[in-house]
Length: 341
Image (cartoon, rainbow, N blue to C red; front, top):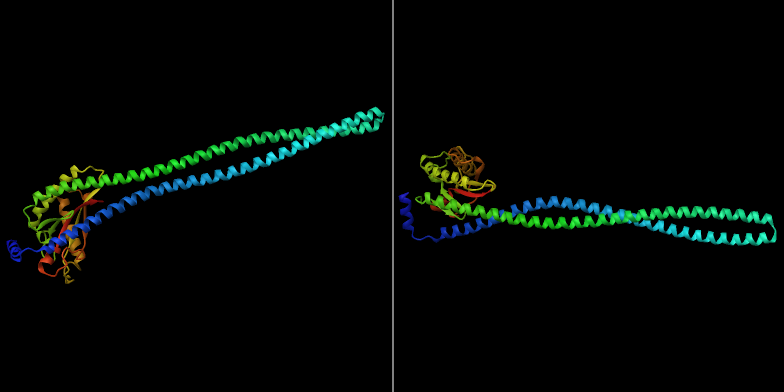
């Protein structure tokens, strides 16, 4: 390690790694924000989907009420037309009866009894017809009154449904706003805890030149923990992982249980392919095995398994695209990141 520091001083100031670190930091911050946005949109979409079903049911009820209201209005109009026709018929019957009664009076005065009897029967028939017409008009009036009551009830129900739909839309909009605020608060809380955790971790690992912070991650060179091409933990790296485990255990006690966070260990290799004849077929398997080995060791030291995630990236997420030994060494690394589940 002393030799590595001497070689670093001999090369002079190299701005390219710093530029790559800065660019990587920007990309990671953008990726994190995009992931947070997508997660928020997922929860909001799921909530709004349930509210859409509720609104669809309300719309169906509104449509049914509207159809029923139209039918009631049509029935009411038919009844009113029929009542008007019967009233006109009744008026005509009364006029005819009055005419017959006048005719009977004039016939009686002339002494024609047969004609009087015939006219009297005609008057009785007119009276019976008028009585039937009156009864039917009374019945239709009752129907019209009942229809008016039903019509008023339907109009009240329609107004209530429209009010409920408006209230539901207001609640949906309010729910979306509150979800966005809650999500932003959770992200901010996790960022605050992450800052405190990184501060503590920086203090306990500050003596290691091969441990550094890149954006929102701690980066450990693989050589701290593993030999070349292997995933068996070496004793020299266990001391550093013990410090990391202690910081994570303290973090578990600090962060409220309702914040669903995990510590993700990402394994990375350089771009040189494996021979294929060893324990691992390719760099993907090697990087994943190294991340899993770190996760298992942290769990053995008391870190909850629900708070640990292992991921292998192989050679496909390099920090340095160069071919020099230094560039390859920078890419052989393990990264620790605090993120939401």
